[in-house]
Image 1 (cartoon, rainbow, N blue to C red):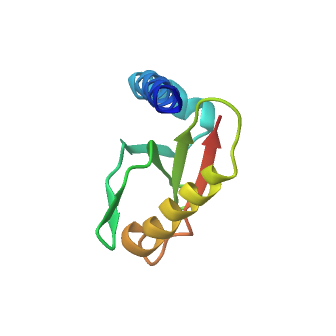
Image 2 (image 1 turned 45 degrees about the vertical axis):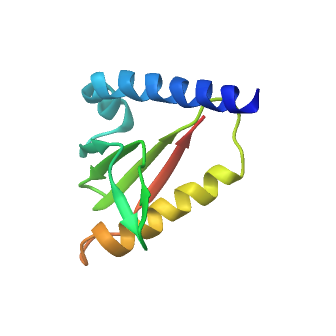
Image 3 (image 1 turned 90 degrees about the vertical axis):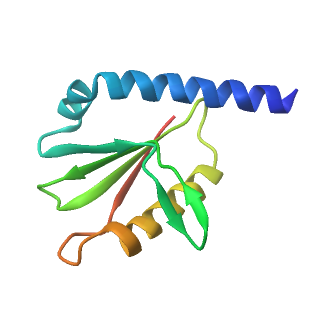
Length: 108
């Protein structure tokens, strides 16, 4: 039963993500100016482990990558660990030397 619940939550998160991607311009505008959409399910890999943050933006004013993780339901501390892993990989593999450290946002 837990496996079924987990699959339903994944589906719910994907539906939310697809809606945001379809309306990415409106979503970015509500997040402020200077945001550029980089991608969804952005492929990251470190030590042979693949990671896929839900949404990735770049903020020109902050000169930083911004990861948005979408979660169904209430916040769980494990979400921070997942987000921290994304941020570490982005900062070590994607971020340019002149950019600021990446920023993470969890939307539950």
